[in-house]
Structure formats: structure tokens, C-alpha cells
Image (cartoon, rainbow over all chains, first blue to last red; front, side):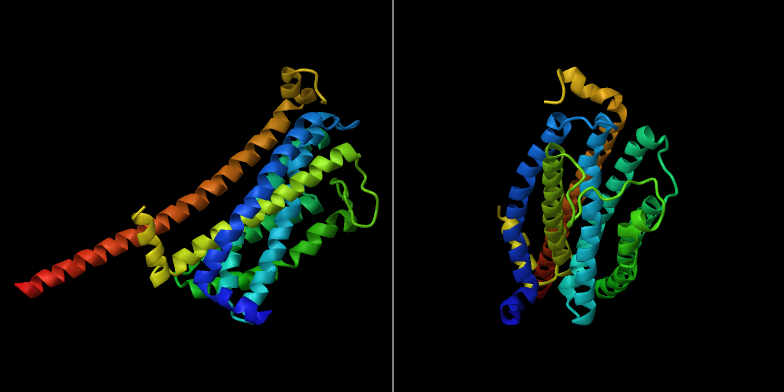
Length: 248
Length: 68
């Protein structure tokens, strides 16, 4: 396994591998997104309590779930990067943070737009909402810290350490609806019980979750390639790539 | 189909403002993320190309001096 993985520890090979994987992620993202969003917005029945406002769920839940998945991915990459001193893993941390931040922002914003008609308030200082806001701040802290160093090796290490510190927030977000009395509703889809949602509402939701996940994968690969190019811009392989592009 | 007409669809059962606000801002955020990523890539390529040009010019200038 390690022997097989070894060549990909070289920047040039990782760049090529990421490039090969990217179209597959895009192919998975586009159809599931289109079907999911049309189904969710136009075909799924209106909620008997919330009416059509519940349709916000089709971006709110996928964004919130994938914001946390992105963080978990980042944390694993940060751990690998710090323990085994894998530079590429630290680049993956830097590549993922902005995507996670955008997803978290979407989750918060759509939550506010859903909270206003349902709870009567755009925002409440409730456990789930507050811990999610902290997630956004942690993401922004990681991005800011990474950009604060001109030495990117040092920047990668610092951002990775902050990523690992921020992991404490993940279980807090997840269990916030259980641990505290909260306005936010509990989980709709759980592993062990029947989901508390009608099938014709659930299928488009699962499709949207899937498309947010594959889009996350696609964007990580894209930004990871950017990080590689940026850091290795003096290396022969990047120069060759740029020259090849200039020639057309 | 949960709606009877297109205008009915746009009205979102009276929640049009909140639903379209949520979808609109989300779409805008994702577009911003994509454009930032694409622009960063283009910027790096431009940077490297400019550096190569500069190095080429310096090399050419040195050769000229040498030949004088």
C-alpha cells in the first residue's frame, strides 16, 4: 500500500492524479444536483406544517453536513501532515478550508432565511446556531493563519495545528440538539432509526447531499492543484506545464 | 408536481422571499468560490509565464553584453 502510494507523495504525480479524478467528481455532481434541486423545489410535496418554506432544507442540510465532513477531512489531513510530515497533506488542509467556510456560510444563511418565517427570528443564540457560527470563525481563522505566513511550510503547519484544535467543535455541533434545549430541530436522518421524513421528500434530499459531497471533492482537488502549482512554481514540472500551455 | 402553474411555483406558497433568498445567496456563494478558484489558477500560470519571460530577457541581455 505504502509502496503504491509513495509515487503520489511526489507533487507532480499528485497533480496528475488529482487532474485525472476531477472529471469523475464533476460527472457525479452535475446530474445529482440537477435532479435533486428540480425534484426538491418543484416535485416534492409541501410540508404539512411548514408549507413550501421547508424546501430550504435541500440546501441547508447538505451544506451543514458537508461543512462538517469537510472539517473532518481537513482534520485527518492535518493529522497526517503533522505526524508524518507530509507536505501534500498540509496543502490539502489549505485547499479545503475555504470550501468548508463557504458551506458553513450557506448553512448559516439558509438557516436564517428558514428561521425567520418558522421561528419568527433570523437568528437566536441557540446551541446549534452558535456552535455552527463558531465553526465559521474557526474556518476563517485557519484561512487567515495560513495566509499570514509567507513561508508556506510554516503556514501549513500552523494551519494544521489550528485545525486539530478546532476538532473539539465537531461533536459539540453534532450533539448540540441533544445536549441542550434548542429551537433547532433534531436530526431528520439517522443511521439507526427510520428517517422522520416522507420518502418523496427524502430522495431529493439524499441526492442533494450526494451532489454537495462530490462537489466538495471536486473543489478540494481543484484547489489542491492550485496549492501545488503555487508552491512548486520554481520546479521544472510547473515550468514545463506553463510552457506547454503557452504553446497552445 | 407540487405546483399548478409557474407563477404558483415562484410564489412558493407565500414563502417566495425566504426560499429564493436562501437559494440565491447559496448560488452566489458557490459561484464566488468557483471563480476565486479559477482566477487563482489563472493568476499562477500568468505569474510563472511572466517570470519565464523575464528570465529569458535577462539571459538575452547578458549574452549581448558578452558579445560586445
